[in-house]
Length: 265
Image (cartoon, rainbow, N blue to C red; front, side, top):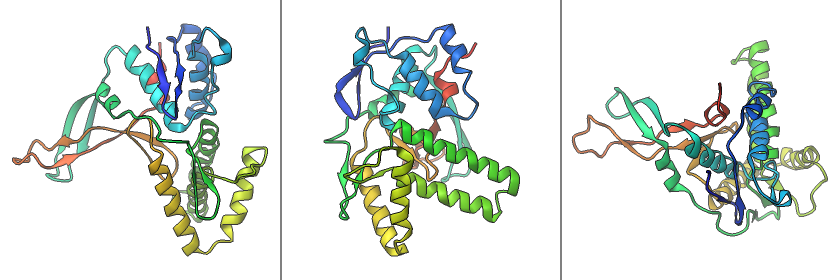
């Protein structure tokens, strides 16, 4: 049995999960490799096990951190061994260290969102955490970056421009107006037109405000997102075994991908 868990961005909503069947796993393989956010949506929608179907929530509308927290909850309650082997090059002593991380410990950093899942900027725009729909949209951009790398090379102008566009897209997807366009793509287009007319100083100030708002709305597990929108889990500090004072500590970024939570046979 998988215990119920509250949605970190909306603790009043409880999520019930069931364990995947063989049929489920076969169906998940029908999504092209690399579309991890798409398979995440399918997985979370299929694994919800509410007696009243009307109480189920579309995982596309959950925040990105909601999705990672619920996936993690599923995994630690169904995995045979919730520990993973990690290694890293230590910045303090220069050696490579290995450790066996009990992933259940990462769950101790779980927290609910404080207040509503939105904050207002000084210019009147709203900042909201990225949703599953946003993450799927952003993922398609990252996949196009791979195409640019194959066609032009990672040092080409075409690749660098595409990378810059994806970094901008990650910020655009967080921004909302009080009168929203009816579709995500139109919202992004409308916001982009405003931002492209900003000076770099104005944009830098706004980006800093957005970062502060998102930090104030942290919820779920202790995670970080890189500039291109990939989410990583943070481990607790690991002490360097060669440091006699035991003060040298490193926190590792751990990718949590569909191959981790979807069983394979």
